[in-house]
Length: 131
Image 1 (tube, rainbow, N blue to C red):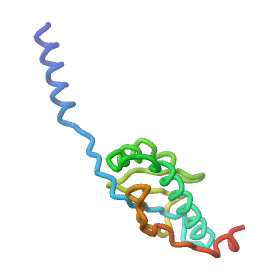
Image 2: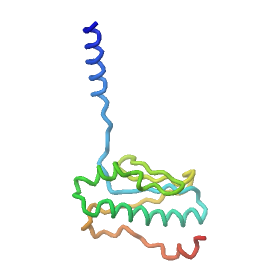
Image 3: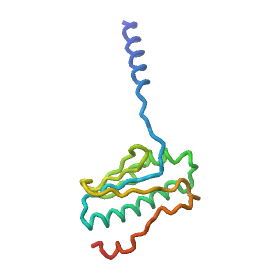
Image 4: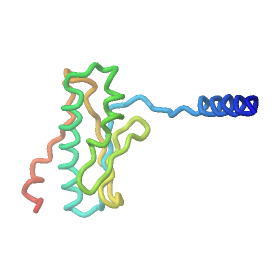
């Protein structure tokens, strides 16, 4: 009896040790899959992009570069917006809005809080078209 249990435990431990969730290193990129290609959804997508960048900047503001990947993975739900969901896929933050049948907005994010790269391309007229 003890021999069967020990073989079972040994077999299960070998089985579970063989499966390791592969987490790709964060590559400082995002994608937002829009609900549709209608103008209102495209404009909302740009507004969501701004919110995503703000949330990301707040998240990494005082973190060491080596901790950013884990911080993004552990807080991936904070990038979700009303009517959408967020996932960590292939080292990217991917946000699906609504039915996610529209265009994809892509962009890069800062590697640390001192990075001076331009990550915001402004869409100045969006506030005039959103109802």
